[in-house]
Image 1 (cartoon, helix red, strand yellow):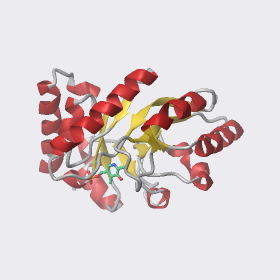
Image 2: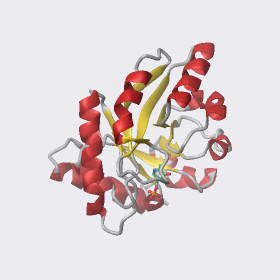
Image 3: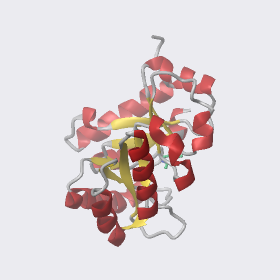
Length: 215
Ligand SMILES: *Cc1c(COP(=O)(O)O)cnc(C)c1O
């Protein structure tokens, strides 16, 4: 294995320092390298060649063009339409369950194929109308609904914090998501991107989704 490229090494080091500040074991936080907009050669060179195999994509279409990459644990982090569910059995985890309709589509396809989807509930914590997630008040009912579906394994919650220059601005959003996760009794907390992943790690993230800082 060649030398870890400086960007991956730096993100790993920043993540580790954030965990230590919060008295967390760095092994509790998984780094998802978000590869949208980057081709197979870049992904190989910047990430996979250095033993990092957890990758995230936003769009099914783009992900399908990267199917040749072997040994990858893929995460779907972007919104999912019901008519694309049929492509999703190759994902380790879907981070964007946001409606009963989508849960029903996953259940129906999962039943047909004998596949159980591992999913996170996407929550629009800050109540931004342009976001895809379910609102905070609707999250509990949707989580309870999903937990009745045998082919949908709901393991956690995910959010995208509102864009801000100062990463500290995301802290209340991350805290609210963690509280929701605890209330629902789930394990996984997917939060934090290039601009705010250290704050997310301090606030308990179990997955951070980092793209531009790695490429
Ligand atoms: C693009 C994307 C990311 C990564 O964003 P960066 O700012 O490039 O790190 C994380 N999560 C989601 C849902 C995304 O769409």
